[in-house]
Image (cartoon, rainbow, N blue to C red; front, side):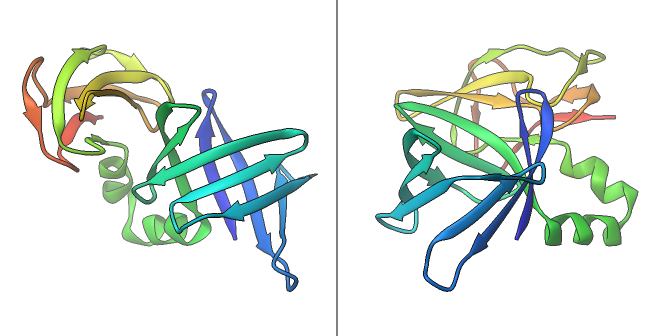
Length: 167
């Protein structure tokens, strides 16, 4: 399956293929990458990429995937080929709505980094939502101009609530 991952301010094309022997073949940007995956549960796994080993906990599902690694939680925009095809079929209005930044979980807004009219790039932090004593940095999923900041500093938000809308 092919995925499109927003990281470090740009998009990366990642292809993951489960082999008949249970191993995983992966490529990033068309270049093969040596990986080994050990799954402890449907949300916890250990991944070896080259010589580096990462213990990961996965939260949520696409298009905004939460990943906890080395005690740090981050949210990464991830779209599969199927998700992209479905968005194209729905048309341009739906694509604009999919760029809205939503709350990954219920929590309290403790920092807001953007204002209406401000330009942002993919991966830029827009606010921090505190949940269960952890600060979760919420990032923009694409390039755009902030149309409206829906959350208020110190306010609470529900999971999947729109935090920031873009034009």
